[in-house]
Image (cartoon, rainbow, N blue to C red; front, side, top):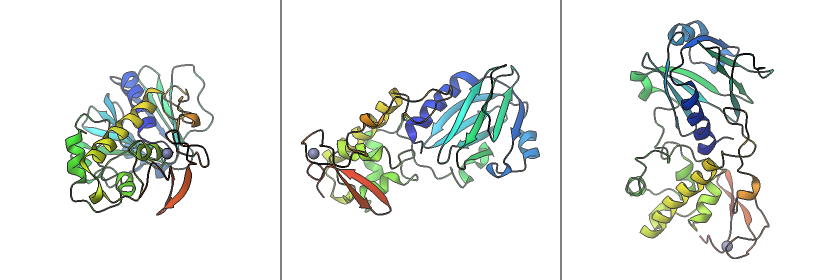
Length: 272
Ligand SMILES: [Zn+2]
């Protein structure tokens, strides 16, 4: 499942490639991906120009000139692929957008995803993105901001970080190495964290996510040009490495149940 690094990589490429392009045709083969009838969707978006593309958590925000946003969520996984004129399109896709210069992109959902069109003034009310927390890639995500987020919270740290309303974009993939880097057990209660542990955790979030962004995201996820990322399994420190030695102390990495999710930890480096 794509998380913040994979979404960030695609959104940055889209911003470079399609900003300034005018939408000429829209094709949606699966009406349930949309939040309105296709005819309405086309009426609002057709002829409009892309102003910018940014990511927020696991969502891509495509801003159009008529103060509307096209919000794309890749769900469990989806290929969002750019095409140029005369290029062969993927055989199966649910959504296709073509620009005035005959370039465009297709979206092929593996399971299910969303393409919602939302007016800027209604953005805060949008059920799926209106309450999204801050993206760690946002410049306003400072240590001070993070400390304020954690202040007086009683949750366990892993649950808190996975909740998209607190911080948007971290899922069960990258959380593993984030907690390992910060030497925190997933079930640690936020109220027990020292100032030092909070700042270590803040740095761990940024270094883990930025490392993957630099590598173009996970090795099994495609970017806007169909290239796979270079963050392969070997890049993980403890994630998905049950039984392998901890890179710090050689203790065997364990897979444990934490609520509804699995966690990979070094029991010695991340005591409860
Ligand atoms: Zn260890």
